Structures are given as C-alpha cells and as structure tokens.
Image (tube, rainbow, N blue to C red; front, side):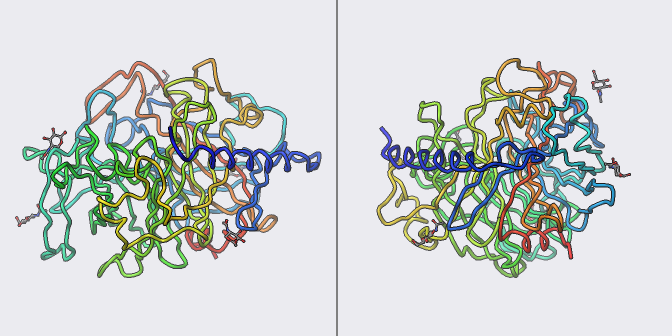
Length: 504
Ligand SMILES: *[C@@H]1O[C@H](CO)[C@@H](O)[C@H](O)[C@H]1NC(C)=O
Ligand SMILES: *[C@@H]1O[C@H](CO)[C@@H](O)[C@H](O)[C@H]1NC(C)=O
Ligand SMILES: *[C@@H]1O[C@H](CO)[C@@H](O)[C@H](O)[C@H]1NC(C)=O
Ligand SMILES: *[C@@H]1O[C@H](CO)[C@@H](O)[C@H](O)[C@H]1NC(C)=O
Ligand SMILES: *[C@@H]1O[C@H](CO)[C@@H](O)[C@H](O)[C@H]1NC(C)=O
C-alpha cells in the first residue's frame, strides 16, 4: 500500500472544493467558457477559460527528408520573434516541433533526431455553439515549412537506436572545446549518439536546448542542429546497474536512476534569470519508480553556457494519482515556466486515440509551485544510495512542491465545441492519447494576464501509409497529429512570455 494516498485524497477534495467554488460564480452570457475554472496557488488566482483552437495534420503527412512527419508533439516551442497579432482577429507565428525517436512500435530505429518548423494561423473561437469537426480545424491552421536534422561531434548523425554502448567521457578539443560526459551510443558498429528527444527550449539566438530520455541528458544544439554541449544530471538520476556502472539501455530498468523510457520529458526556461528547468517523467527507481508519486525537478544556470552550467536547484514534485481508483501514478510529459517558482505541468494517462483505451480518465495541464519546497541540490539525495522516497514514502526532511489541478483536456463540453469527444468511438474525432508539449503566447492588450496555451499530441508515427528512415510501413491505424489551444489567465507570466518570444 502506498503511504501518500491520504494526502492525495485531501488534495482531490481541495480541488473539488475549488472547482465547485468556481462553478457558483455566474459567468457573462457571451462567455463561451462555461464555466471558467479558477484555482488559487500561493495566494494567486489562475483561471482556465476553455478551448479556443483546434488543429490537425493528417497521420500520413510526409516531411522534406521523405519520412512521415509523425509524432511531432513530443515538444513544441513558438519560434522567438515569430508571434504576431493581425488586425483581423487572427494571430500568426511559427511553431518549432520536435518528434522523439521515430516509428519504434516494434523496435527502435536508426532515426536521426530532428525538429520541424510549422507556420500557423490561429483564429480563436470563443462561441459556445459547437463547430463541426471539419470547420473546427480552421481555427488553427498549420503549414509545414522545413526540417533541421541533428548531428553530434564530427558531423555524425544522431540515432534513435537503443544505446547498447557507452563512449567514455572526453575532454574538449579543437572545434569542440567543451567536455563530454559518458555518452549513450547506438552500438560499436553504429557509433552514433542515441537521442530520444523529449523537451525543447528555443533560444532567441536560434540555438536550442533538447532534453532526452536515454541519458537522461540535456543537449545544447546550434541553430543548424550541431551538438554544442551536454548537461549530465547528478549520479542519483543516471541509470546504473548493480555494480554502479552506467547502462543507458531503455530495454530494462536500471538498479538506480531514471526508469527506462522515463527521462527528461519536460524542459522549460525562465528567461529573466537564464535558468533552465528539467523534470523527470516519473520517480527514479530508488524513489519508488512507477509506483511512487515523487519525481524530481532540476534547475541549471545557463547564463554562461560556454564555461559551465551548474545545477542550482532540485525539488521533489508530487505527481497526481488516477481518479479511477487503480492507484496508477499519472506521469508528466511536459512543464512550462509561468513565474518565479510556478510552473504548468502536463500529467496524463495513456488513454485516447492511439492509446491503451478510449476513456480518458486524467489528462491535465496542472500547476505546481516550489515556493515552499525543499531545495535538495548538492545534498546526499544526489547520490543513488540516498533516495528521497524509499518505496514511494517521502523522506521527512523534504517538503515537496504544491500541486494543483487546473486545465482538463477531457472536458466534454469544451471538446464538443470543436467536434471532438472522449470515449467511444475510437476514430479521428476522439482526443489523442499522448499529449506531450506546451507553449504560451499573449492574448493581447485587452487581457494582459491571459495567454493562449498551445499543446500538441505525439501520435507515435501511427499511420497506415508511413515511411520510416526511407522504408514504407503500415502501423495498422491512422492517428492524426492533433493540436489544441486553450485560453488561460496566468498572473505574473506576461514579462517572461514576452521575453521568451522576443516581443516588445
Ligand atoms: C507558502 O507558505 C506561505 C506561508 O505559509 C503561504 O502563505 C503560501 O501560500 C505558500 N505557498 C504555496 C505555493 O503553497
Ligand atoms: C494521405 O492520405 C490521404 C487520404 O487517403 C491521401 O489523399 C493523401 O494523398 C495521402 N498523403 C500522403 C503523403 O501519402
Ligand atoms: C486574417 O488574415 C489572415 C491572413 O490573410 C488569414 O489567414 C485569416 O484567416 C484571417 N482571419 C480572419 C478572421 O478573417
Ligand atoms: C572526432 O574526430 C577526431 C579526429 O579523427 C577524433 O580524435 C575524435 O575522437 C572524434 N570525436 C568523436 C566524438 O568521435
Ligand atoms: C545493459 O543492460 C542490458 C539489459 O539489462 C544488458 O543486456 C546489457 O548487456 C547491459 N550492457 C552493459 C554494457 O552492461
């Protein structure tokens, strides 16, 4: 039995009280968002105002290399300098999207990591009258533009293959002045860096940070996709075997460190302080693994990346538990910085189109605050032998982050406004299963604390007409790439969002 259940129950009751409190507030007749949901965190009120946009890219769409565009929702970012409000009520911009490791339902493939640019036009729809599915897609129209492939040292292409070997740490030399830690490598026959890309931060100078599941590492790439630098997390997070040796494979859980396929899913930047935050998808093995709610958030100072990127903070974040009563912990797929100490967090089940079942039970963009949480960086907890939560029970020395329910993807009233639904039938109007990305842009002067909250699904490259690394495939089903745009009120976020988007 897990020991955290009573406190979680309390959290849910609190949440229900807050939500029902919001329900009693009468909303104006013209308000499409029926009802808006207000929550209070650290004395600040945040409001979830409903869906304003829906977009879709067909599952068989092919990109410039000839491969299926595929699971682009693993990470998204609005390209700095691209966001624009038009005079006719629409907004335009460029979305940078990053898939993970290609079509890997049967086995991992030699898929070179990459990012794509998609131009978009958002025409927010706030009316309560439901739009038919085809019409709804006109609220967020995406146009594929280009692809940048990723390379590591010596112009070698990266790979999606499971890393069966390790390249020893190397000091910086010549054109690569920065040292590399131990690196996950596909195989001795294929000496390519293995990358399972998940998080993305687009810098204003065109360079970008990518977080990965294998290391789990954080990589800085140049604008043209060449590796500049690698951040290695503390020893407690590295996947280690019984003998305390690193083993990067995602085919089996390690003895300590990140669980297999549960790496740095979330990555976000506080542009004001040049702090990069990364979150583990779920608890490390020594912290209870998939049965534990206690995952960890890390902060790195990236103000002078060419010299050093020190770890400056580390906190425990409690993940939500499924309301279905099966005790399943809802792992996180993304975070997004709101204001100092406050983050949006995408936590979800695997149900929906392309997922394990049709009935979505928990798919949320929630909030958490580390204002009162214990900073454990540089302590014994960074060693694999000192868990923060042995067998899932949190150490008494640690105060975790405060976690609060916020935006619900599976709100049936909101979905119906865009021709979408939850549950049967399992067709392309069923909400996708795997949402993994978040981006923010300002609504404008009329509502300075309101933001469009963009999110995209990872369809796992599921299509009946696919191309993977040049080879045709049929995954047996078609799962489109879906995009949703919510409107949210986030007091305190305006300056940070403007800086990140390079807006005046
Ligand atoms: C942190 O603690 C202070 C003092 O108890 C409280 O006022 C504040 O709301 C707390 N913040 C969060 C995010 O819980
Ligand atoms: C994708 O499928 C649609 C519908 O079957 C078809 O019209 C289109 O040509 C296909 N596109 C590609 C790139 O295969
Ligand atoms: C505004 O103009 C853009 C660019 O011409 C167009 O794509 C968009 O659909 C227009 N929006 C409205 C609401 O007419
Ligand atoms: C890159 O090439 C140089 C020269 O051949 C070699 O010394 C170095 O080890 C290579 N680096 C990597 C990471 O393979
Ligand atoms: C890593 O672990 C996998 C799975 O347990 C095992 O097959 C492999 O031999 C290990 N690799 C090394 C280098 O120990």
